[in-house]
Length: 496
Image (cartoon, rainbow, N blue to C red; front, top):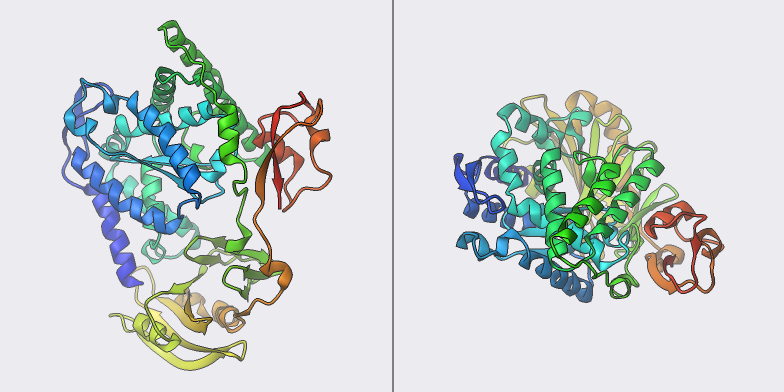
C-alpha cells in the first residue's frame, strides 16, 4: 500500500508541477500566454491518468458503441481548432482518444493532451446524436483551450493542498490525506474538472461551434441541460456530479440555442439529429448500477459474478468501485478497503507482503479461517503517520482460486471502538449460494415505439425494476410525466 500511495503521490506531483510555467500558445485564440505545462507535458499527463482511469472504471464492454462514439467524435474533432490549417503542427498532429466508461454516473470529462470520456450513464440520458455531438464538442473545447494548464497556473500551493486533502473525503474521515490517496485518478479528476465558470462557458461556446460546423442541430444540446436541471431538482441537490463548478443548467439551456442561432446566421445548416441511429446504439445498454458487479442485499455485500458475500455494518457507507470496495464508518473516522490481491499465492503471503513494508510495526499475526471454512491470515499492525499513527487489521482469505485482502484501519486512538467490527466483517466472508442473486442480471434499456398516443405515465409498464421511479424515467426520456406522447415516438424503457 505504501508503494501504491507513493506512486499516486508522484503522479499528483507530476500533474501539478510538471515543469515550470512558460509562455505557451492557445490553439483556440492563437495567442500565447503563461501556462503551467508544455503541450508535450499535457500529452504525458493525459497518457498516465488515462491508464489509471481504465483500471478504476473500465470501458463499457460494447465495441459497437465504442466505435460509434469515436466515429461521431472524430467528425466533431475535424471541425475543432485542433485540426485547422492555421493551428500549430504539434496540436494538429496530436492523436485524440475517445472512451465510453462503464459507469452509471451522468458524466463527461476530458484530460489534457487529447483524452475525452463519456459514461454510459450520460449516454442513456441523451436522445439523439446531436446532443452527444455538443457534449463531445464541449470536452474537446476544454482540451483545445488548454483549460487544465490555465487552471494549474492559477492554482496556489495552498489551494493544491486543499484539493489533495479532499480526495474521497479525507477531510471528513479525520484521517491523514495520504492514507486514502490510492485513487489518484480521482485526484486528477478534481484537478482537471473544477474549471472556472468562464472556462465552462467557453467550452459550451466551442461545443456549439464545433457541432454546428459539422452540421449537427446544436440547439439540441439545450435539452440535455434541461434534464440536468430536472435531475438536480429531483435529487434535492444543487448540481449533480460533473456540474459542481459549472454554470447553472438553466442558464445553459437558454444560452445554447442562442449560440446555435448565431452559427445558423453564419450560414451553417444544422440539420443532423440522427435520433433513430442514436437509439439503435443505446438499445440494450446497461442502465444504472450493474448488480453483477456487486450490491448490498439485506445487510450483505453480495457479488454474483464472483459468488461471494460479506456483511456490511449498520450505518457504514459502501462505495463499490470496479477494482475495490470501500466501507466508511458512520462517523467517517474508520475505513475498510477490500480488493483482490492479484500477486500473492496465499493469504499468508498477501498479509506478510503488506506488513513487511518499512515502518510497519506488527502487534500480532496468525492463521485463521473465514466462516470456519476458508483459509485466511491476519495481522494487527501500527502504521506511523506524522498526523497520528494508524492501527490496522490486514486480513486475507483464499477463495475460489483468488486471494481477497482487507485493509481495515483507523487512528490508533480509535482502535478500541472499531477493532471488533474490523474483525467481524472479514471473518464472515463466505460463499454466495442464493440462486436469486447469483442469476440476477443488469437492467437494460429497451427502446420501443409508443404503441398509441397517450401520456408518458400511461405508457410505462405497471412495474419497474430496481426501484426505478416514473419520474426518473421521464427525465431519461426528456419528457414530462403527463406529457402527451404521439404514437410511434421512441421511448427508453428499462427491463430486467
